[in-house]
Image (cartoon, rainbow, N blue to C red; front, side, top):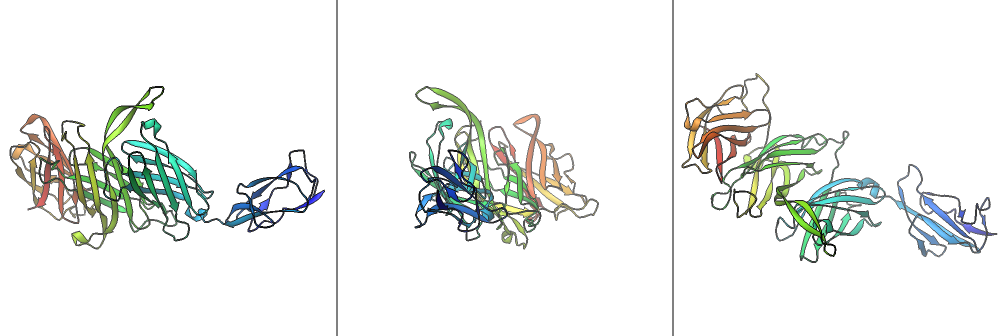
Length: 453
C-alpha cells in the first residue's frame, strides 16, 4: 500500500473518503498503488467558501471539478483548494436593459432578467423584438461568463452574450455585451440586483406615482394624445405600472427598482402573429407572437426638481417605436423620443375636505383626434374630489377622476362617431397641478388637457 496526502484542504472544506472502482478502499489513508480512486471536495457546512481546483504537491492544477479521479502512485499528494465565495453576496435577481450605444431601436433593444446563485449558476431571459429568449450557464471564478444564445425557434440568428457580475465593488450589477455577428449589431447590457427585503425595505422609493408621456406636436408625425401611467413601488421594491400610450395602446410592466432608484422600463407593443421557418432543411414552420413596437428606457425615482419639488418622482427619457402598420392608426409607424413627466401621488383622506388637485374650477380642453376643431368645457372639482362638468356642455362631455390613483377619464360625443360615446383616459400630476390624456378618433388620437381656470 502507498500513502496519499489527500486530507489537506487549502481553505475551509472537507473531503469525502477515497472511493475505489475496485471496491471499498482499505480503512485509513493506505491506498493500493496502481489502482484507480476518486476524491470529492465539499465546502464545509455554514462556511462562506467555494471550491476552486485540485493541485498536486508542486501546485500544478490537476482538476477543476470537485471530484478528482486518480491512479494511486507512491507518495502521491493532492490538495483541494477553497477560496472565499464572493458569489454568495451577489446571488439574487437582476433586471435591466440592453441597447446599442448609438441609439435605441426596436430590433436591438430590450429587457434582461436573470437569477444568479451562490454556486455560480445563472439563468435568465432576453425580451426584445417580440421574442423571449432563454439562456443559462455558469460563471467562471472571476465572475465572467460567455454564452451563445440560440434563436432557432424564432427563425433568427444566434446571439453572443459576454458578461461579468460585480463581486468586489458593491455595485450589485451585471454588465455585458450582446453581439449579433450576422446582423451586425452590438448592444451594451446593464442589470441591477433586487436588493430589498423586509429587513432592508425600499422606503426611499416606496410610494404611489403618476406620469405623463408627452405627445407629438404635429398630428402628421404621430399621436398628439398624451400617454399616462400609474406607478406603485412597494416596500420590497416591486414596481407596478399600468396606463396607456398616446395612440390608445395599453401598457403595463412589473419589475424591481435598484438600490439607487433606477427603473428599467420596457414594454413590448403591437403584438401580431407571424410564421417563421425554424428548420430550413426540414421546412419546419412555427407561428410566433411578435411585437411590432416597444417602449424602452431608463427611469429614475429622483428629486422632482423640474416641478420645483423636493420629494421623488419618476423621471427619464424613453423611446417609443411603432414599426409600420398594425391597425388603421398611424399605419406608417413612428419613433418618438420623449421625456417623462412624473409626480408623487397622495390620495386625499376621505371626507377631509382636501382636493386631489389644487383646483376648484378648471378647463377641460380636447383637440385633434379627427375633431373639426378643439372644444373646451368648464369643470368643477368638489371638496371630495369629484370632477364634473355641468350639462348642457360641448359634446355632452362627462369627465371623472379617481382620487385614489390619479386617473383622469370620461366620455363625450365625437362629431365623427356619434353612435356611441368616445372615451378618454389620462392622469393628473399633483406636482404640476394639471392633467393630461388621450382619446381615439376615427384614425388618429387627440389630446386631453385639464388645467385650473
